Length: 262
Image (cartoon, rainbow, N blue to C red):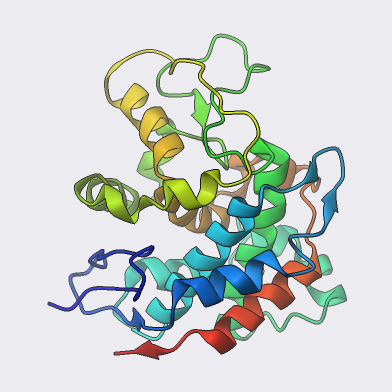
């Protein structure tokens, strides 16, 4: 079985959920990272958060390149879940539909939906963690447990794992291939590493730890959760996360430098 592989090794082999053969990104990861680093998205000052760590923007661009290539494979369930047609009120793209329309996003186009959910996620991650993958439990939550304690870029919690059968499979796949986590990429430019311990023990504690250590997993998990349970993300639910169109433009440029082959 062929795997998703990038020439430089930043995006390492990771089987798709169905076991079907995913697309491959054969263009240098450095080109994707360069597009991200020089973009207007990287230069944007986020309200209340300042500038994003450059590794956060690079990492999100690399993950988008992966999802974009995998979207060419109709059997890839993870990519399909991210780009599926608009659903009901639980869908973050429905919550932000006016923002998408204002920025000319064609919600009937599956790649534009994929690009839009990553664009929104960039703003959401800045609200949740300021782009810091090491971010631990939300200190404003009273009496968090191992199951409800949030962690990582998008502050997911273990109790969201049951929202989709894809989540447990992603969890196990990334655990088996931690080299695909892109941790060092996402940590670039992070000024303060969060060393707070995880909450509780068992699988919930393991989820918190792994979400912080494996931002690639956290990203793919979040992209699907955005589409099926946007209420999990407070800033999205309250329409506080910024949808910044120059980040969408950056991701579109990523598409132009990535060569995907079956």
